[in-house]
Length: 296
Image: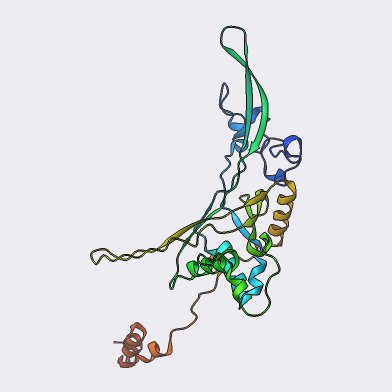
């Protein structure tokens, strides 16, 4: 059975400004509705559900202040890795529209006529959750970001101002904060469903630092949920930028089942220890009796 004609909406009507038009179903079709008088098996393809995909976070701009810190490439590289590769979860991105209405009584029966008075969009407040690594590098990085570029808790002055050498002439938001693009791809990982471009992003904490002693309890891992400030843009322009980034990705050859083994040979000292399976096979082969000609 073939699909219904015009199963995909494309750029018609509400798909006009969507980069995901080729991945958007046309729900205006008669056969696509499944909750009418009967089930339309002919249109089951047009009843496929939307499943929200995991976001892709892309570091667009690092704080300019990192350039005034020693080993600036390490500061930038660590931030990119934390944003794009290490987060367990990223939450707080939202674009929900809310319409406010005033209401006026109509007649005496209690009916009300409502009139739109305002439309607002929900504010995005990104929250990253990381599992701390051996030696606490995540806490140390975030602490360094805060105390060097934002403010030291004791002096109330960022420590970048106390270093020898070149100093900044201002501490404006691009010097202290980062810009991140968040992309929700479609199931094919080739089209943008929605994207957020968040700037003026600063950590509100470096992660909880606690100490305890209890010999009856096992040790436990540490996780940080770090909320960031954010000024967020969205719309066709942001989606277009996100689409450019997706287009630059080469998806060919990333099948994990085709990745070569991460270890290519047995260690030399293990080979030297003649106490394994292959050693027993070789020993048994060396001790085998010669078979007489013609067999037994």
